[in-house]
Image (tube, rainbow, N blue to C red; front, side, top):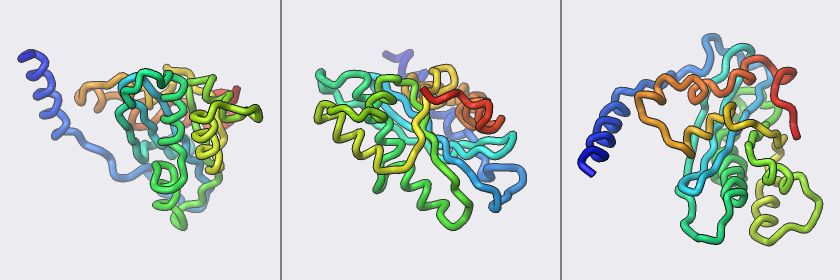
Length: 195
């Protein structure tokens, strides 16, 4: 236990030395249309979302949020993934609405793309069939916000760092966390295809 505490203490000390860039891009250009990209993930311990703003060969983290997973035994991992999607897209005071409101009138937002590594959740979000009440309520809530839903493999999902956890010193070096996956920097033509 002492060794674990020393690790936590060292990590907390490293966090205080972390730096975050305030400027998203080297040169600001508010005339061109932008896209928000929201990556979501879940585990049995946490679920969360991270929002990125790409432009040309650059991409920047805008905001991220996580929540502790409910400890109910009857919630499945796909249901937790759905709750992560809701954290990323739910209207009201949730993450994406907050970002849209913050940027409204400042930049031209063309569209929002939500990336999930759960194909079950993607199927639920696109389904016309009757779904269980727990799933249906969250799907309805997510679909109120106009977002394109796409599949993203785990290796390209920065929100995976939220659910797996990462030490502060490693986080500073994690390019995928600060800038998103490399496909964001190459335009929509080379992005992972929707499933």
